[in-house]
Image 1 (tube, rainbow, N blue to C red):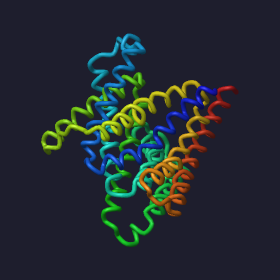
Image 2: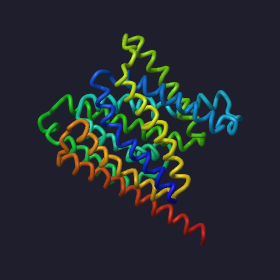
Image 3: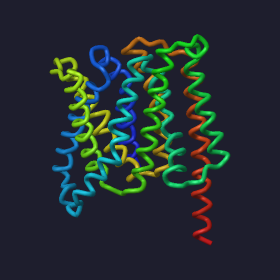
Length: 299
């Protein structure tokens, strides 16, 4: 269990730095350029990881169709999710963008109802509404003053959360080896962003400072964080480990304050608490349902 908490801690720490590092890189780049470099670094790192761990040999029965399915399932989570999140981060304070993007657990619930045909209960509806109230609180004056730039940024972050919600639901339908499926998705994302950058004339060579940010994002916040998170869930109690993820946005507020000098507003803190409250409400319903099913199976 100690290993599980260590793995979870590594993931949470890496994920919490995303807002600050991306905002710094977005000062000189657009969202597609940022995704272009992050995706190839993540893809190559995962390729090396899969070769070293023998994942290809363990899963040698995968066909071309399986690999294409991995790409189709992964694109919402590796292309659309980051494309929208980076675009939102570019238009608004990084701390607020990260908080709004944390709607993804609620979106996972919503799309589980749509894609996986899970029941949309009154409690789930209340949880979704509460979390969106949290977004409104985070936006605060931007809504009352009709700040178009901030509102567009918030919309992009919500679309990112929607994309990740679709991704999580699609993943539940197919049980592929995650490091392999993520690797395929990131390589596909690299190809897509390469085409877009070529069309827009945005292909570039990163300088040393940018490369440091890309290596951190691609290796630590994407490849390593996602891999050790799976290890944490496999070696510990899923419910307890999953709840630790809610530390991430609070820790992210600290990094954006330290490195970006963004002021931590009361609206951001209250809004984040409300969003997390909505997530916890729907999680409690899920836990109760699992406990009931367990009791029924024993009787």
